[in-house]
Length: 341
Ligand SMILES: Cc1ncc(COP(=O)(O)O)c(C=O)c1O
Image 1 (cartoon, rainbow, N blue to C red):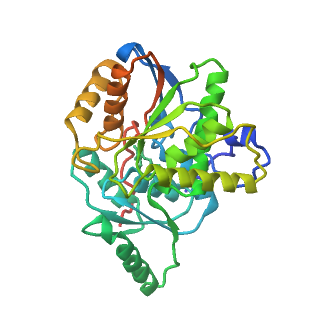
Image 2 (spheres, rainbow, N blue to C red; image 1 turned 90 degrees about the vertical axis):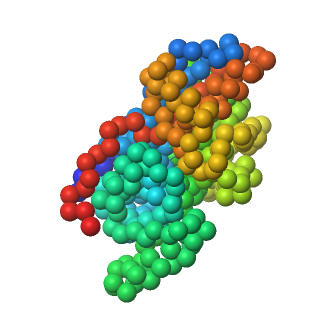
């Protein structure tokens, strides 16, 4: 087992050294910011390369797992998601690295080579899993899997919610928001009017909102719906942001004067037939991103978000500065784990 290196501080620890919550170093932060060579509707577009967040596997979950896995190091974990879930894959990969066996309950999603590759790697990393025929049966699947582990005399796993989106996991994205503020301060990018990202379970958007506002930035968080209402919603993301803030206050963090948690906008109209279904607009945006921007996007989250971002900027009456969070891993997938079940 490779243990993480000594924990270098993240932007949250740099700003609030009083925080006593454990954190592991799994990724390489700060993730780079780059200006993209297009100006849709006269706006300038920047990208934050979260796809490069981890050496072994990048993407939006690495920050969350630094806090989540530290909180439960050495314990078995049970998490849930779609059959090609980036979250389950990242949790299983980094969980194995820090001695947490990870179990998964998975619901079907439309097939694609990306989903199939994720699934194959996931199966080699998970300690066990159960497939359920629809998302509605995930709670039933969790009970069944727990009963199976009990019958086998195995320890009861800790529940990790979909997307790793509880207040502890979301601290990673509070750090992400503060990291953007540090990069603005260092002159690496101008202060954006908007940050664009997908709205899945809502944890990234909630954590980012808290981080940006703690840094005193009023950048709007443009969260593109990729999961159907009411499984995800702006109200749920805002509630989660308040729960994150409560956790931070309990750690001695005092928000700055005129602090507010406004400015989270849910962008509808890009989900198409549903979660995981490719859309024509998303596929066109992914082709453009590949050809003109050198970015590899996938169909469930990042392609739909780029489509929404480009169309909104193109139609904007005024020129804006926008930052696109490239939230899906772009590293080559690691080889399947040896001794896979
Ligand atoms: C590539 C990618 N982007 C964005 C998200 C959404 O993050 P959240 O579930 O915190 O809204 C996910 C969730 O799994 C993801 O895999």
